Length: 323
Image 1 (cartoon, one colour):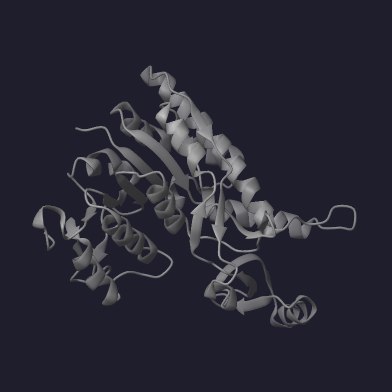
Image 2 (image 1 turned 135 degrees about the vertical axis):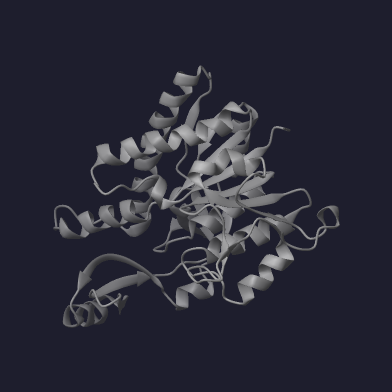
């Protein structure tokens, strides 16, 4: 197999466990690293991105609950950077352990990654991403009046603050990431979608928002001219009619055919939908690029085409359908 440049986007199940302690999450990542090292052992250049939902949520909650005049809470963008450093550190240790077991002499580098967004993105007019603690309706109303922030009821569990989820415009550290790949290093980047920043009067400024991990991974894959965008989740394939008696896995499919299924609302928002959209956009960005959606356990087999949903441009080899 030709050696490829691959962006691997880890789903939350690759980190989280029933026990939220640091050690439990580290042990989970040690298991995750077993699968990742299979790709590295095959000689591919690998950049790893990851989610951070539970972790950044916990950090933000700790900041809010411990806030005092002497210890003011850190803003959300800074909490995101904290979570990137924490998970990157854990994952680098886990991969380093597995590399040594396989006798692979490579270095692992976690990079705190800033992702530029457009402050005029329409998402800033419609905050939608819940973060932080739950409040009663009365508490939420008082906070909205005091701060001007937006709070919504979250699945009957109480009221939570919501923040925007803008589209990524650029990965600021992508030249550094590409240089490290050229020197055959393994890079961990764009954790949790990256730290959202915007450019203002000669400097980059953090902004309170959450960038979707899959869209940030797409932008990074395009920026470093990757061959493959691999999005790992809890299922082996993307499915149509998921959860019904008509459920069917998608194997190799053209971007056009997948777009048709997307328009028919086969994919859940906040779950499979962003992966499908990112897969379509990446496959269409250049001929010979492909996107893969599969489970962590089948990452290596999916790269060989044995399992998983493989998305290619319709123009590739005249391919126009799904099978």
